[in-house]
Length: 242
Ligand code: URA
Image 1 (cartoon, rainbow, N blue to C red):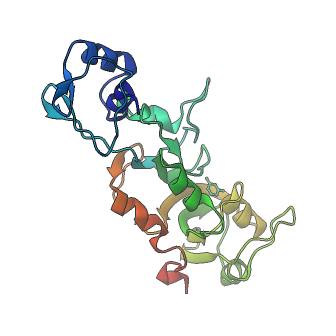
Image 2 (cartoon, protein in one colour):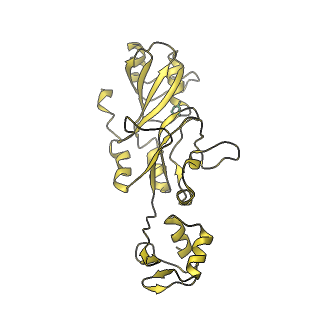
């Protein structure tokens, strides 16, 4: 890849700042001064140093965001705040995108990455990654609702859902576990049993969960091992499901 691109992707500098740093002689490649931003470097082989310090460059990046209410799940939007606006410019420049989507009025765990294969694997219905949501409903959740969820619900428009979990926490609050990502799925499932959703928050995606004291709007970077936890439990639903 181009040297200036690698410096930008490592975070901290825009492309033009990286170009200036290179032309100012602040960057070396394998110990020799680099003079051209377009110089090609091999990301996992060449040692690139800025002001004498090795650049920590990871091409694949993964972030876990506790999405707050009121922001949309998109990379960019001319009118509304997006989840990307919650990250500083040096991270946005890594080319990260949301993995799947949460509604504007849903909060909770959202992954962002620039690893397209990973995103595809998490979203693909074939992977069957379990997602757990906490829902507050207008109505009283019943054992019959639990049975209908477990059987595979038919939504208002006739769409058939895969078997899903419903665990009643209080009469108006429940944990819903699904392994699909149909449009507004959880809201439509609860509406189909006559319990419109008042509040919705995603707690887990596969083997990754928000800590109980997580604050909406906060995020952290995941390393590759943590990110792979998402798919670790693809075929095993959370225990309470059974
Ligand atoms: N299901 C919904 O209805 N909304 C979401 O944001 C996520 C799942």
